[in-house]
Image (tube, rainbow, N blue to C red):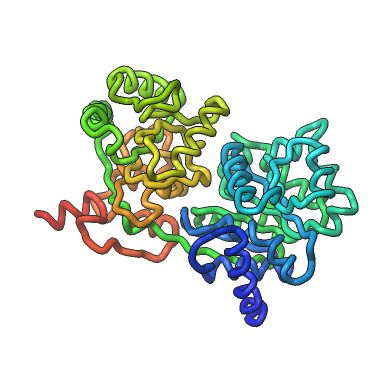
Length: 415
């Protein structure tokens, strides 16, 4: 694979330019692209903000570089907001390059246009009757479909049997789609989860690109759940005092009812301090984002959170915000209660500090529905970063200072 890697490295640089990306492609991105070019299945686990999406966005461009001009990629993604965000980004770089598939007519457009990256939800692909899977039987896709991508692949294991059975259904349809390599992508995965995804998807001798780490610029802290309301009150005063200079904060909630109530109370308490000149929700410094939010509100939140200079400062969210959202300038992640899984927690705190800035992850210790590993994380008196690292099977990347590590390390260092 070595000579193929060198060729892919040259191609990757060209793809970086075409997609208007800054810097140079990383070795892990090049290795994933190499696997795609030689028709190998590949599992990609890279930290949030690393640039996983490039691994599949570049595939059609890479095949074009080796004189295969009509290569297309199918991306099965579990979140509508994420799909729309990525389609917009790709089409801003290359006009007409990506599409969100919703109908058979969209498949026809792929065959006659410049579209090279197709996004689809598991439900749209598999629904009965009228799912899009039969449309891929066309000769065009048998000739040109190169890679099928499973984005946020951890959801297949964590959600596929319960919350999103359509993801399981989509994977079961893979043998009926045109022959193509499989690429699975996620930001967090234990070795057990990697093997479960590989087994469920039928990957053959998959290349595994796994670089797991707990960000060293995130200070980890656990507080008693009884102090959560006091934290919110303090945040109200902070927004009133600092308004648009309030550190950008994302607060995850364990239920929609709790989220909605907390958001309404918060907005009432900050009053006119929570607005900049403008009209409607678009003038607010505070917003709410969950799976049932209105489409226009979701679109606005994604636009604001992708701009580190925007006026949006505090975001009340459900777990829907954790999946691949391109958040910028987030320096504080708060959990009103513990997620169920360590994987979920690492994924969600990974929204913060994407530019390397120092930030905080505060977890309020309510663990009613948490698995044992998360309960142990809350209880431990040892280094929280080391605990999460061991739980995930990663290599430990210590923070530069004990004071920037976690609350437990800080206590030991300052005694």
